[in-house]
Length: 363
Image 1 (cartoon, rainbow, N blue to C red):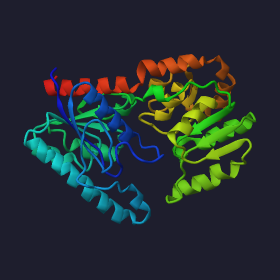
Image 2: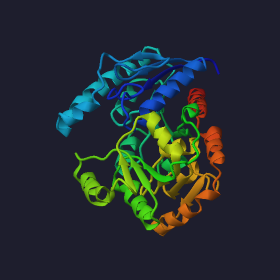
Image 3: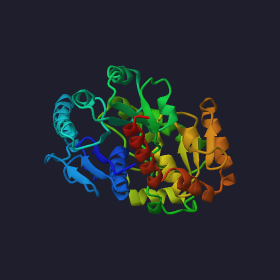
Image 4: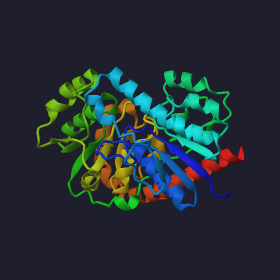
C-alpha cells in the first residue's frame, strides 16, 4: 500500500515521551509508533502535549503537560481542566481531518473523543490501553453504528466479552537494545509496578518471607487514594525492613533495567484482568524469568516452563513458592529470545501499520 497520512492523538497531560519516571506506557507507545511509521515512509502528525519529541510532526496548541496539577486541584477541578484541553486538541485534529489532512486517525484516548468521530468519515482506530469494564463498554457500544470507528486490542484476553468492531490485536513492544541481558547476580526476587491490591504485592511479600528470600519492590504507592493508602499502610509498608523486604519508589528507566537484569525472577501475582503487563516483557528482555498468576494477558506473554511459570491463582502463595523453587530450570537466554521474536518496537509498529492498511482497504 502507498504511504499513509496518519494522525496520532494522545492526551496532552504528558509530553511524548513523558518526562517522568512514572509508568506511562501509552505515551511511550505513541512516540515509538510515530517514529516507526515515519521510518516506514508514512506522513505522521502527533497531537500531544508541548515538549513532545518525535520524528513526526507535532501539533500541541501550546498546551503544557498538566498531569502534575492533580496535586494542586480537586479531582473535579482537574477533570474539568483536563477535558477542556484534551477536547480542544482533539477537535482541531478532527477539523483538519474533515478538510482532508489525514487518511486515518490513530487515537489513544477513547471516551472523551468518541463524539468527534461523527463529524468526519475518516476512520478512527482507537487503541484500548485499559480493561474494557462494563461501564466503558456501554459507552463504546453507543457508537456501534459509526462505520468510521475501529478498535485495536493490546491482547486477545482484553477482547473477551467485548462486542466491538476490533480491527486487530497489536501487542506492546519495547526497544530491546535498551535492555541489557543480566545474569540474576543480585539474587533477589523483584516485584515492579503500581502498589495496589490487584497487583498482588502482598502475595509476593508472603511468598518471599515463607522461603526467607530477599524481595525488592519497585513502584509507586498512592497516598492520595484512601483504599490504596490503606493497602500500602497495612499490607506492604510494615513488612519493609531494608534487609529481606526492600523498597524503592519509581525508578528511572536505566536503573529499573539494572534491577531487572540482577533479579532472579520477576513476581507478577496479579488479581485482575490486566490487558498487557509491560513489566513482564521488560524483565524477560533482561533475561529474567516471570512467575505470574494466570490472569489477563499472562498466558499470551509468558511461555510456561520456558520463560517463567504461570501459576493457577487458586494455588495462591503456595503456587508462587513452588515456582520460585524451580526458577533455575529456566534459560535466561530463552527469555530474551522470546521478547526479540514477539515484543519489539519493530513488531508493534508493523502491527499498527497492518491494521491501519486493513482499515483503509475496508477489509
